[in-house]
Image (tube, rainbow, N blue to C red; front, side):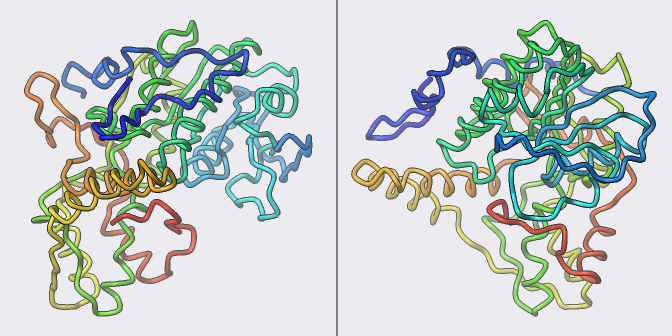
Length: 380
């Protein structure tokens, strides 16, 4: 599946090492076709250590494994499910970091999602499981990491779920896979197709944008610096809070009408452009709006330069991919894409929840970025 037009002919297929395990399959050749499938109509560490937080959940609900439970969305999904009385097993990597407080009430197991044996032994442990929720995703969006995590790790998780007799699989994907141009988008789509081909009752949730991803410039504005705009700042999204998304995902496990469906979802705000988000920040800080434009052509020059250099220095391949990621988010709306017209439709983008971006910005300005650290995801 060649998807990058690069002079050195680097392709965004999974590295061969991902196909060596017995439980791996080839990447579906028509993975790109799944970008709009199900959305064509207008949408209304193998150590065996188990760390248990205080158990408070009822034992009358579903038994659910949450993979990626220590991540930004995963921890909130786990908390929501615990609050609804489900028995949650939270899968986490081996780490010295303290557990997120949101996991209190779940059984936390250390398992490596990239290791089939660890998933079976420490993750599922031969015990009955009703449903699996996958919130795992590449941290960087780099080419190799995307195929290792977004595709291969999810395939291993799916194989483990099928072997354990799991009936339901809920996947956290992303709305940007509607128009795939990047490695992580193609990796996500390849797994989406594999999941849809399984016998499980699957649901694929494609959120628009997380509030965290829109917080990168809060410190700049608070420090009196101008808000940076790529191009004219006209790209729009309907972002959603982690709490509202977690509630929506929990509903998917409890509502049979959401099974075997691809569900794009945004938050309650109307679509906001990058410029409008900047204006909101200035209003909340009481500062006069100041913007600085970054021409898209700078990225258009940088990307082919890095691509050419990557032919001789492969380590630069991810640098070129990161530049492509920046360009993508600077030029594409995070809204529902109408496959009939090829245009984004803000009015048709489904929405849920009560948390607004204004509320989020107020909280971050008041309390700081604790819990909203951007890591490698802080583009805007």
